[in-house]
Amino acid sequence: MKGFAYLLVAVVALTGVVVYMAHASGRSEQEADPIFGITIPPGYRDWRLISVAHEEGNLNDLRALLGNDVAIKAYREGKLPFPEGTVIARIAWDYVPSEENNKVFGRAQSFVPGPAPDWYLQFMVKDSKKYAATGGWGYAQFNKDGKPADEAKLKTCFPCHEPIKARDFVFTRYAP
Amino acid sequence: MKGFAYLLVAVVALTGVVVYMAHASGRSEQEADPIFGITIPPGYRDWRLISVAHEEGNLNDLRALLGNDVAIKAYREGKLPFPEGTVIARIAWDYVPSEENNKVFGRAQSFVPGPAPDWYLQFMVKDSKKYAATGGWGYAQFNKDGKPADEAKLKTCFPCHEPIKARDFVFTRYAP
Image 1 (cartoon, rainbow over the protein chains, first blue to last red):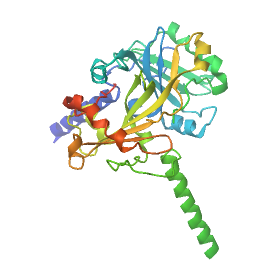
Image 2 (image 1 turned 135 degrees about the vertical axis):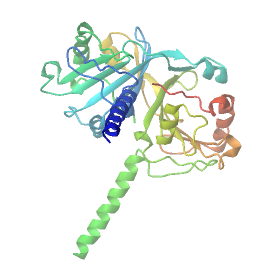
Image 3 (image 1 turned 120 degrees about the horizontal axis):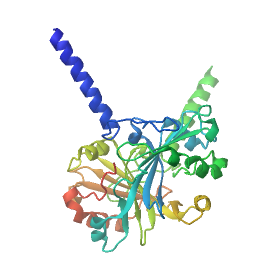
Image 4 (image 1 turned 60 degrees about the vertical axis):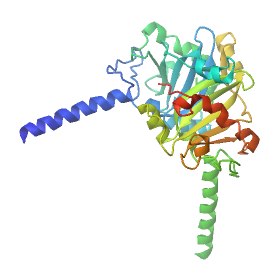
């Protein structure tokens, strides 16, 4: 029985690891953001959609904004400032033409998600006390391997969001 | 007490209506698609994200693809053909520049969802028997008022999806 118990523990432990890795899209490490201490929220890819966007210029990406339950509720009720515990996730993919779609349409009109850029994942986490110095929000960015952006990069987040203070530092509007 | 009971019934009835309308994004009517008999699935806006895209040309929209639980499971497992009960939702918005974002970035680089075009909502519903004549999929389109597209328009769906038969007539790939 003792051997069986050890086996069971081992299986549970392994299963736990497998489930965890699946949630974090295959990332086994969970290195925290070096300024705000944020790690990738498990299950963020299952969150509901806030909106989508295309950024041109140096970014040239297609992006989706997802929100945890607190975020979605606040958005739908038009509540500002966002409540404590709000987390907004931003996933970006390289903006690439879809050859297979364009073949069907007979012209180059379809642009779809391509590979993950360095700014693949970004999160804004609302904690008014912890992040008082940056408008009540912590900021995080991870590449596709789960590696967080460095301090220099993360220091650019708040200055860029500051002009949108009237909407609690959040650029994205809800797309109905 | 009788008056109170009537009041309660009235409140419950009204609340039911309000909840229903909220789910259908304010649409009170639920007119069915004239060919496939599809109505707007309640709660589709809460479904998980499959992918995003930008279509240029005559469409010129930003779009999000959402899937019901059957769809998301099949996509993540790479299962083809899609199982019975799969529903894929496509929401489209006019592709418009974000003046407020561009002001912050100092250049015209940000494109976001604008008003709803006529092809605001589209659904693909998998029912191999019911929709055997169109590859096992029913197709539906609704404008922002919940009005379904006419027969002539709906007859163009399957011919356009037919070239992508190898992927069970579904253009969109899952964006990780």
